[in-house]
Image (cartoon, rainbow, N blue to C red; front, side, top):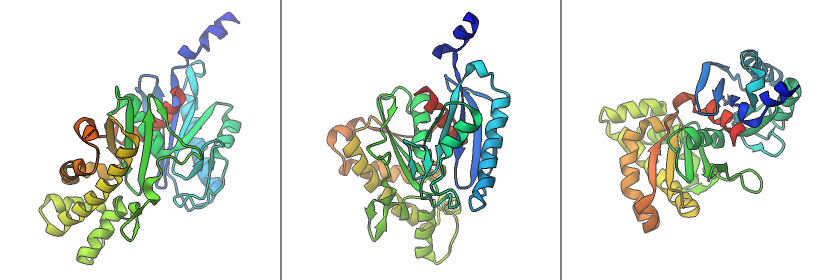
Length: 303
């Protein structure tokens, strides 16, 4: 009996399973308390418009694969980062455009019920940037402002090792904020870049293709990223002036094109933020790569 008690001391529970649920894929992995990935992560397509029962079955299949190779006496629990909006307090997916068949689904409760493990859940941007704050580019910083640039525009605020969720759990949901004749996500996202390029050329290509053309010197592609950068500066200025972070981390697929847009952002931003912030805040790229989502989800268990 004594050995069992010793084996389950909090400091011995040094592993967590992380689950990253997006509109395109679900990825799952095992991470230790120092941010080391144990073994090879698992992933599968989300099939987001399929029946919710199939999506949940896929999620549980990945979780069970991870559970089958995780020593139970070392497992702290299961962390979930999920595209939102969510009710973080209850672990419920609300009316989520990226998961249209999962509206009002109590995902955390179902996984807790099925696995008999503690489960913590937050939106994917918060989870990803929490991982960056703990183990990635934000390590050692006090106040981290994370911006995820991909299918949408996400934002996370991590202060002294804790995610700031806000009163309703929607702190950092800047994507819906007004900008020009729409919202900021219309311009500051992968689809935003693609749409800007289409207005310039009447051709619809992906943001990745726009970035390739910009690197090749195409004027319209460069202009599309200039307009994207202008919108990003607008979003960063408001959030930096509000949060006063010591570091800003840019993550997501679009951040891979930072070499194209970040010089313009860095040159414009000091005009719109306080002198103190301009002199001290760092803007860095995320460092955990494609594993950031499930790593950050696992990190929720160590918060």
